[in-house]
Image (tube, rainbow, N blue to C red; front, side, top):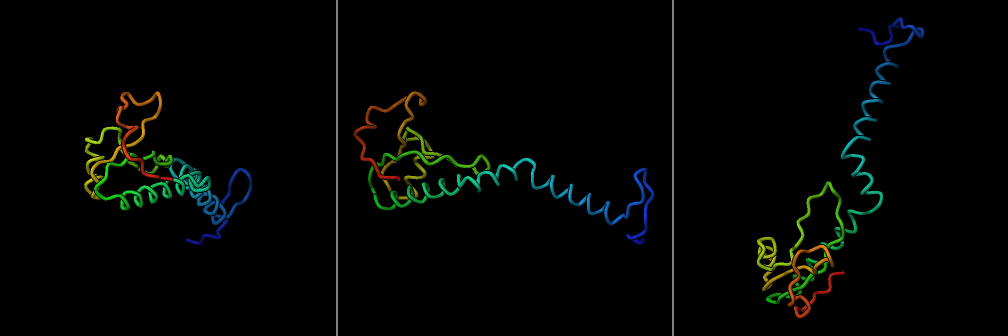
Length: 134
């Protein structure tokens, strides 16, 4: 089939190649600017993902620098909604905390509570050795 063959339309004669080009442009636009792609571009432009990565790398360096200790960590920077990120909990016996402590060979880890948001705040949180996580 010849793509240069004219097609009759109510607005005049169009070439199929122009129709195909327009359809491809609409398809490309809808793929790029819909749903997760738009949100991912926003997170990359605002550097939200890079701040989160920096805070994770800093946390890992602190965990590696304090083997065998009880650590009180600061919270990670907010991550993209497209990126699953599991945060450490207040309770050091939580399986997430236990697994992280076991992996990095520290005694225990927990995170600072958010004032007014966490249902329980451990009184020993002020006495645990804080790890600088900035």
